[in-house]
Image (cartoon, rainbow, N blue to C red; front, side, top):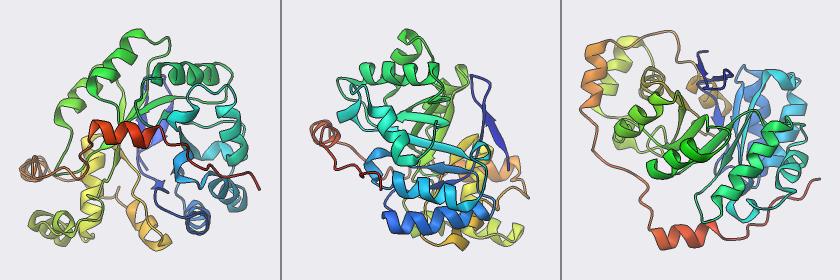
Length: 281
């Protein structure tokens, strides 16, 4: 495993599992298995409605809590709620999360950010992240907040490598965590001839080549899967190195497509929905 050093000095694994779109039952089966298999980074969220299942997995895995890098996200409708962090921790059945994101930017994101700052000061969160925020809002957080953000989570993959944002984050030593790292499973991306050629050379799958590209780009990657074997394969990507020429060849894919295109009005409506978060059972 390789690690990214955050601008607060903490280190986080650069590869793990994301449980987006997994039911509580699916998450419960996947997370426990992969933790036993050596995966140490787990990414969930209020909105995924599987935090409680993820917390149960962590307990059942037998892996010490301090050895797991646990990530969650606050949903906009609870940004200003004083008990939001404590309720999240209760669902996860843990005393702290290693990284806590604001899930979407809405008008009250600044109040939500201040709530996470309080959580950092009381040890309930170890780092602060911004998910799906524009460069303008990221810069505002850097310039105005007491505790600077450590990680930004955005869509990133060889078709859309976030070139300009990557440069901006490097200035403040912030990490970039990629969602849709495999293009949301798009076979067109995974089966690009360049990845097929490199998979043959390095005796890896096409998906492993793409995920290793993320690591060499300096990205943190959290591919999701219901299949524990696939998840373990997704972190078996550290025993080879792509050459500079190979990275340049992959860079030619930049600009091919972006999978998620938000409409501001739709995005605002979605982000302000009151989701039925899990009850703690």
